[in-house]
Image (cartoon, each protein chain N blue to C red):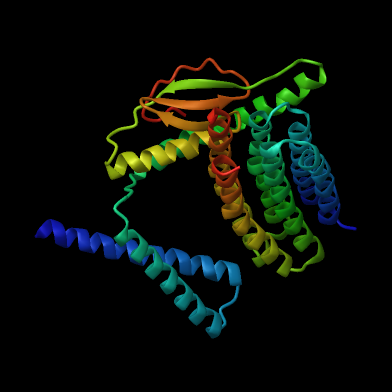
Length: 83
Length: 95
Length: 166
């Protein structure tokens, strides 16, 4: 295991508190936890791509980062106006 | 050898920041307070990982691509924080 | 007449700069100088610039930027952001000691400028994003001549420049 894969494992640990808040928090708490979980996942995919020397995983990270922006906007506006 | 150490320090710093922010999101009382902990994770974490990538690999395709992804995350972060804060406050004011 | 011509030239320069930026982004992302990739980049950047131009020409809301604003942001934001990261992370330590920490809503004096001026519109957008970069404060909204922020750790700073309350 190289340093980058170890960092990926460390980042996966950071998903646990986000998961707990998503399971137990209120509506907006879940949205905030989801925001952080998405960010941690993007970082984990980037470290995994470098650790395994597979650049296609960076494309996954790029796609997730691009989709997370309108996704979070849509969630925030839906929660604010309609729920 | 010292370069490997610098890479390890950057990676450890990035992971520590993400873990600390995760714990912050877990322990705070309300959504607005939790939201502040997404900030350091959006800025310091990607910065540390981008620095580690450049230190280890220099200006190769993987580090440039990783930096672009992380730059996107850093630029989107404040906008999403503002939109979420606005949604939380407006929802609380609604009867 | 000369003004209109200058406006057209400025528009063409903006479109070309946008095309060049997007094409460079494409090349950085694909990391190859294969002729197919080069042609794909030209096509992709052209479609994106065309879409951007169509949206901008149909929208009455226009934004205009000044280069000096980015100098202001570059000078103030990094240290402000680093200090705020320290403030926010120190809350974890205070929580571990059993201290109760809660954020507060704060009003900061802000000069929003004229409502329809393209420069004022762009400055308002930059201030909202710029203030929200530093994690201790998140902009909730602009209320008249005030910026409404949510601060996790209260700061006692007075705003020296109401145009840029960073």
